[in-house]
Length: 241
Image (tube, rainbow, N blue to C red; front, side, top):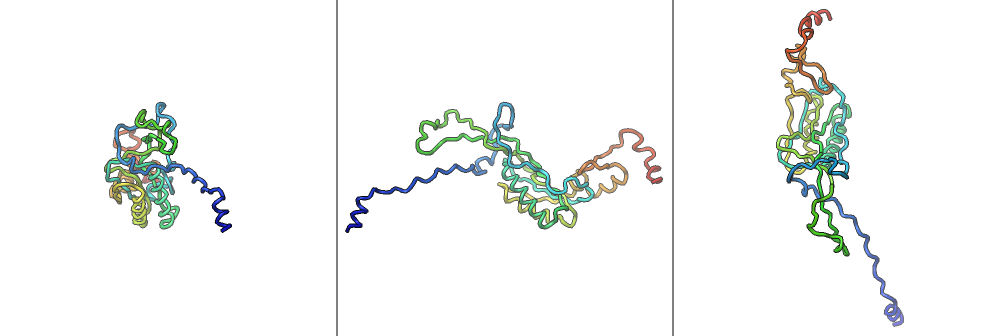
């Protein structure tokens, strides 16, 4: 009885208030489709946060195209927007799989779209005591929130060039990166020579004729026009060598 009286007379103890949690990011489905005109960063649109993706080329990016003749591409099949967060997630997943299964020195990954479109958010406070701060739809033009890239049907999202024996590993890496994007994508194994625009059937023939010269990771096409020294005496010089 004494214990019950003490409990009755003791002041009621309330649990401490739960800490207020910061609101998370909006899901990408809120910004999946393009509405209105492009809104790039400019002197009028300031305070844009940096895009999540900062590296667009991974692997042996300075290797000539002759060493990595095979190429595979991840092609978008919808008109939509892809955020910088999903581009970075796809780059990490593709790079991780290629390093583990193909080797660190046997591929070159390139992220093709760049997120220049600025996403906006109209922040409203929904917590208690925010009635004086919330303005509803008055002045609803939002503040910069993130960046995204606008892509169309047929836009290449990720490209990988590698050796012929590792092209199936590259295709599997691209298949796994599809899960980082919304919508539908397709994996395409290219018939071109690496990242160049020339078919593999004609690449060796044109290179033997001297019509193709190395140009970084690609090749430059030499037309029949131009200075005569490119055409006259080439066979004699080749014979002397």
